[in-house]
Amino acid sequence: MTIGVLIPVFNAESTLTETLNSVVHQTRLPDAICIVNDGSTDRSASIIQDFLTAHPDLPVEIITRENGGLGSARNAGMEKLTTDYIAFLDADDVWTPHKLEHISKAILNHPEADLIYHPIWEWCAETGQIRKRRDQPILSPLDIWTHNPITPSACAIRKKAMDWSFETDPSIHGVEDALLWTVALFHQCTFVRIPNVDTRYRLGHGMTKNEEEHECHVENAVELAANRGWISAVDLSKFRAQRHYHMARNAHKRREFSNAVQHYAASENTFKSSILKLLAWAHIRV
Image 1: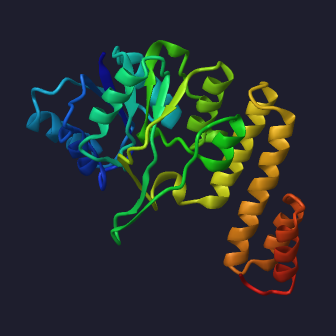
Image 2: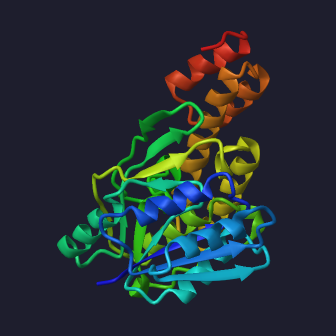
């Protein structure tokens, strides 16, 4: 059983060294590493070269290409890797030293697994603040879209289980992963959750920076999933109501009361949401 590591890189000079070092320090080293430099214009290329020079014995392959987006970069790396399993690692995240050891044990204990995932630490590198993100088992597509339990840097896939191609449409940038997990669930792939919290997910980078744009991409992706029959109309309706409640709470906390009222009105009509809508209408922050 072999495990490859796939690292897409785009202008990651401030975080890339720490990410790469977390791979080197694994107690179970990977059988292959593929780094996809997706048209970086900063010092990422030189950092990658320094890494190769410092670790000449590691089985590393580099793909250098024009910028094509995150999904396209991951697709290029998956095409290059020939290992049995592929573990994703984004260029701003960090693994704990036992990450691949735990993945290996999970594969041995669950040979039926097509996708293995684990919880993450949400991490603010600037302040050192860290907390475990709440997660739960995946029983339906709605769990993927509502609770976001699978972060790419915290999962590994069995390469031959299905066609793992990420969508490359820019209108769903940053949500390609949730869409692919939905496809895997639709095709009845076997998901295995392990309890080890082996990834530090860096806040303030990537998709966590622009909430409004990200919400738009989420809506585009879930609508695409519904149109292709990967999620039901009922799940789509429930998801939209829950997302409106989520956006209402965020707007309410920011004192954007009119915006909050609109989102509460579009959320599920519960006693709690009704009370919160009245409080937002009265400009009372909670």
